[in-house]
Image (tube, rainbow, N blue to C red; front, side, top):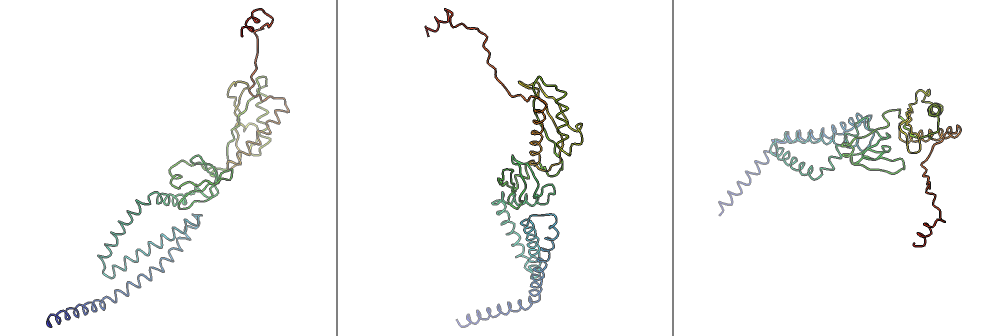
Length: 300
C-alpha cells in the first residue's frame, strides 16, 4: 500500500514538474502572444479611425460609418487572435475555433437571413452616389425625399409629410426613379377647347402664355403643342415644356401655375374650355288631349 502511494505521489510530482517546465519554456511565447494582442488592440483602434476618415466623404449616414469602422476593428482583432494562438502552438485550438466559428456563422446566417440581407443592402445603398439623403425618389409605389439610409431600412418623407419605411432589400431589388439626378423636368399638360374655337389661335396663345410664365422657356417655339383627339365635348390637346426642377413638388407647382395662367388667358380671349353636358330632347310631340293618351292614362 505504501509503495503504491509513493508511486502515485511520484507520478504526480513528475507531472507537476513537467507542467512547470512547459510553462517556463512557454513564457517567451506567452509574452510574445501578449505583445501581439496588445499591438493588435492599438492597431484596431487606429485602423477604425482611419477607415472612418476614408469613408466619411462617401457615406453620410453615421450608423453606416460606425458599423464599417467596427467591422474593420473586429477583423484586425480576429487576425491578431489567430496569430497569438499560432505563437502559443495552439494549432488544434485554432482549428477548432475556426470550425466552431463556421458552424455558428452558418446558424446565425440562416436564422437572420432577412436581417443580414437588409444589412448588406444598406451598405451597398450607402456607397451608391445616385442615391443620397435629400434626393427626391420614387420606388415601390412611394414617392418622397430620402431622409435616412441605415443598416435596416430606407426612410422616405412623402409630400403629405408621411414617413415611409422600406426594407433595404426591397429598394435594392426594385426599380428606383431619382428626380434629383437631373436639373430639368418636362411638364405634360392636357386640356380641351370647344369645337367652335380657332385652333391655330389656341395653339399660339397657349405657347405664348407658357413662354411668358416660365423663365426657362426662352420662346414659344420651345413649347410642344399637339392636338390629340376629337373628344365628346371638346377638341383635346397635349402641351409639353421643360422647366428647372429637382423634385415632384416643384413639378406640381409649375403645372399648377401653367393651368392658372392658361385659364386666365382663355377667359380673356373668350376661348371656351367645355365640360361634359347632357342634353335631353323630346321630339315625340305627345298630345295629352288625344283620345289614345286618355285611354292609356285611365287604364294605368
